[in-house]
Image (tube, rainbow, N blue to C red; front, side):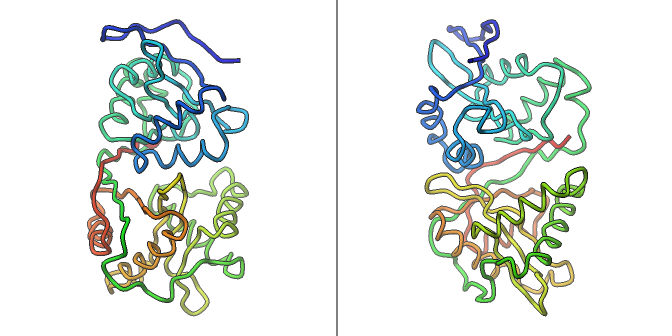
Length: 292
């Protein structure tokens, strides 16, 4: 059954409301996701694979309707991710969310994600206002053509033969990037996730002396766009010019999955940004992430 709450007045001429979407909304959801395919690749990947129903997706999707038309949506799972949102949609979702926070992060276009966090914090207080980390500027980058530098021929798809070393590298990457261990609380879940990346051909690495020293994954795929995540190079090897050729190889491998390769990076990570630009990525947007 579709969940409804009382209509919410907007600041515009129409009346907006929030409701939990169901399978009948799928065509309109796909239309909205297609408006900004690079920006929406994470949500698009999940919905293309599992649909809109919470029972199959694992979380609800909040829709924002105005004048009888679906204008925006918000993936409301472990990551709260707005899609095609304006200030009216953000205000409506902040009211709809309630005081109980179940997500671990808010991720999306910078202005929208930060506005959603601010409104949630102002409306509901500590459960939403108290955060572990805020990253307000994360350039979104993409590449559709060939890399501008020669790829490292040693970078290849990983197999379960190198499972242990790849898993160890993945844990190090996540802990370094996010600030907490991914195995904290649910080690089996993260092991399954990394194993799935390998078995589906979306995990890439460079091996030296039997050990994974560089890694990257394709975490999301939606139509012609895929998103690279989990990029990591052994700290002992940084500053030697290895990262750019390795990333060029990742681009070529990822383009066998989808022709446009995207990622987002922290603005303060200047070496990574320089590496991506050297490979041929261009900045196409900006995200923000709020970690709880």
